[in-house]
Each structure stands twice: as structure tokens, then as C-alpha cells.
Amino acid sequence: MNPYAKPNERKVGAQRPKVSHLPRNIDTRTRKERQAEKEAIAAERRAIKKSARRHLKQQLLDEFEDTYGPVKEGPENI
Image (tube, rainbow, N blue to C red; front, side, top):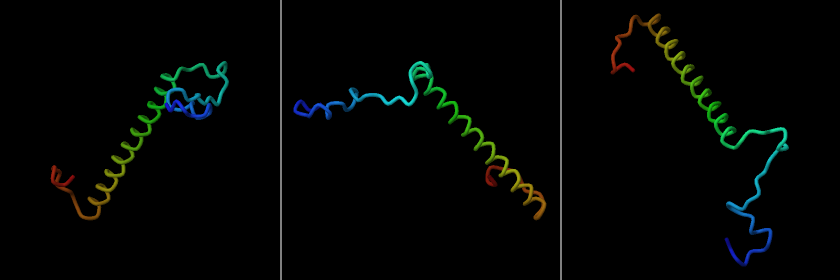
């Protein structure tokens, strides 16, 4: 922190005032609870995307097999 800063310039870093969009009596969650909820939502979205990718890959393989015949399974065909 700059000791010669103006009064408004001192509120940076750890001293920065925290912005709250809801009154404290409405939103009683702690920061850790909000962060955990946010991470859970992100993990759920990742799982949905992963499932969709696997589903699309299986659809592509099925369409390919319908068109060109069976595909030999193995690590070189992934």
C-alpha cells in the first residue's frame, strides 16, 4: 500500500470493500458455501459435456458402421 495515496486510493487489495448484491439477512451463505455451490455447478456442467461427447462419438461410430461396415476396436482407432 502506498503511504502517500489519497484516502480513496487506500482501499485496494485486502482492504478493498466487498461488493454484496443481496442484503446480509437474505443471503446467509458463507463465502465457502457459495464457492462450493459454484464448483458443484461447474462440475455438473463438465459431466454433461463429457456425456454429450461420448454420446456423439458413439453416434458417429454407429453411422460409420452402417455405411462402411464394422470397425475394428483397438487403441489405434480411437
